[in-house]
Length: 124
Image (cartoon, rainbow, N blue to C red):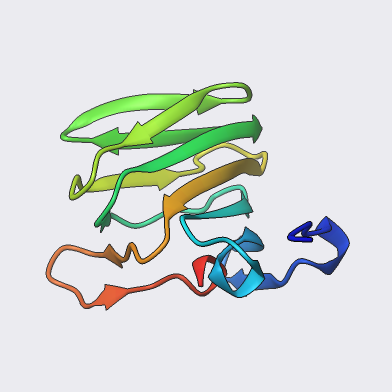
């Protein structure tokens, strides 16, 4: 049964960020990857785009998002849809962590402007 218990899901750490891999091909999903992530307070984020549409569901805290030069605030209960190949920047300027769930189709990759393609390990 493809039931992924949070306690058994792999955890990935990066500076000012933690991701918990929920659904992914390595855990039985064939179409979508899903992870829960926490961005620590003060996380400056980085500009990047993804090759497929990505969806964020905010669980707690607040984050700032910049898409096409437009700035918005993502708060608990909000959903954010990032169109494929659209550069965006997600940061946490406040003093409280931001937690969300992300959904990205299997096989998608991220790419910073002028950078190499990266497949996030939590989505594999």
